Length: 252
Image 1 (cartoon, helix red, strand yellow):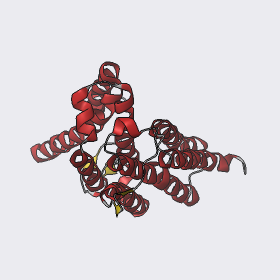
Image 2 (cartoon, rainbow, N blue to C red):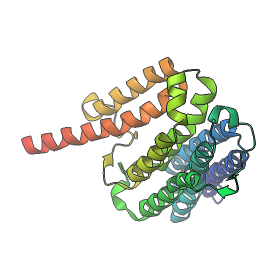
Image 3 (cartoon, helix red, strand yellow):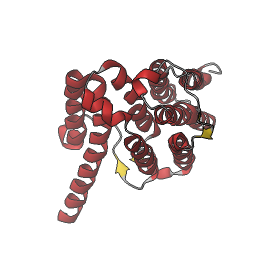
Image 4 (spheres, rainbow, N blue to C red):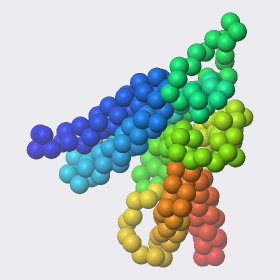
């Protein structure tokens, strides 16, 4: 019994380990492998809660540890990635080369805009721990979703040779907008549905089923480009779901 209660926390620590490795990789401009470790960390983040519920050993320690791990994996890493992308004139050429913050003896402040994501993620996670409304759904964009959005950008640049898409991702105003919009969405009061199922009936879960079906098709067709599209669709589908719920309440 003593060992069993520590299993979810050990999985959470694996999330933190992946996030820490991703930080080191991102700082050294290996954004591709940093993305892989973040995705692995987010996978551990999913399974620690699953393990806690399965073993019936949920506790306050696990809740706090989970948020601390998420600050690194889904907060610090995406902030560094946007910092690195903003720091580079040519993102494609700089993914595996050294980038300096001093150019013409002037310190660049613009790349630090990326750290807005880190601050917003930390603030959201602190709020999440004391917000009792988010037990079965979310208020604001979950930090892993924001992190996945950001980490998909270097993967798209690396594995998709689409000039228009590359130009958009390398545009500094696009990256600034991404940082600011994600920071806002993580801490806004917009209700977003959770992919946890109480039952599997169509009536109760039709929005979720439609979303998952579209997400699957999008991944098959677009691969890494599908990731930011799916995150945007997740927010849009949640807004639609909220409007349908309000309409249903009014009708009754």
